[in-house]
Length: 625
Image (cartoon, rainbow, N blue to C red; front, side, top):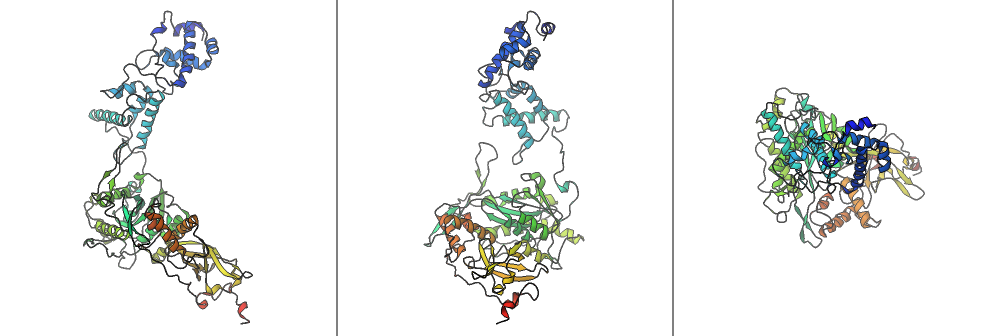
């Protein structure tokens, strides 16, 4: 900077004592040495020293010092020159200036306006904000980003001990109030509602008019209830143990608000098996249950859409909309949905309720009308610092749940729900909206293969390799999921060893495995699980969990007779000793009362039944017989 420029910036008689300066005590300690060096360099420049010499002597970047010199004489938002406040590090990024005498220390009228006056850049962002404000049960990610920016500026300026960060909401409530009141002024002046118009479409029904079953939304929701369950000990005693998270999986039609299917899952999370079970349930004809509770009954208008039509067929959905939770986009889930659910699968973003607004609204209805009134039901806290509010007046310890009764409750409620007027359907019932479309000649997607697709939806399909060792006397068999599968029809067919066959195992019973001919697809042979997995019926989930827990406990030995019964007893003991919540007991599929299962031998199969007439089967070993 030459002398002419310096004379223009700092005219003769400029009194540095009158320049505004920040409060060093309020400045973060790491910035103080930097500020002092810059302030000394600025004084030297004003006194006549060149910028190059001052920057070199005080160890300040020459470009930075040039910017400070120009900024120091510019007017600040308070009408005074920046002065020595320009020497504060990160001033351009919004690092603030030390609070003036007018900076509020506590809440007072117009206190928040004074806070924003010290941060012109943040004030401009706040004044230009046109996004939605957060409401109860409806957060706003855009507002959260604005609030985090304001909070960071205040914390970087060392103002955490002053208003508004010293309040209970740390300025969040003050910012909401400020934006809200400012919008009211705009509305009063005839400037609209001050909110941002939606910039993107989030749902299919915003683009086209949907017909029944053209879009079905599916999701899961954890129930707001802390409950207990009764568990029988080995001595016949009954103890009460807490139940962890309970999930409810639901599929709902967007057009008619009809609930196609529901499913309860006990545990901290749900996996791929319940997802496919729910979709299969939506394609299975509904039959009323026999409630175990005497006062529980179906209304005269109880109904489910999975009732068969005049041709004995179940109506099917054209599109299933869900989020990208792990259980939803698992290889097994997507594979079975693609092959047997048919139609389209729309996997949207997780934690984006605006994309599946109808299922989210249904969850609120289920919570407010039935689920929170279970013993231990509560309404979760909505604001920071609040606590959950109990809804049910009954104590969970005195009213434990029963899984069978819970299923009865949900089935009765959902069936009765279809006979209640819905405000979103012009006060028609979901059943009336659904059947009126059919009565007017509307088309539904049906298939004669639905029963077969239901079975295959709840199966796991893979390729199995037949193993066997003639030298060691080990007949042909298949190893899968920790179990050995064998059939009497393959005992002497050593030529099949090493061959790969398409295989299928049902979710409901993992004791049987079916192999299919790789060319024709016809049933080739049915294999039975050998001990210790042959006795107690069990699902695939139970098999997977039993393998994990028995290995951890060191109980998966060769001399064990029934692995599933051992897993049930192990889980019962863990729950009784309060090492596991009671939902593990439910997930294990254990009986309510302890019982010793009677081991059964694998079913002997007739070779003529399962041995194919053509293929790779050889009878050379039988010629000499």
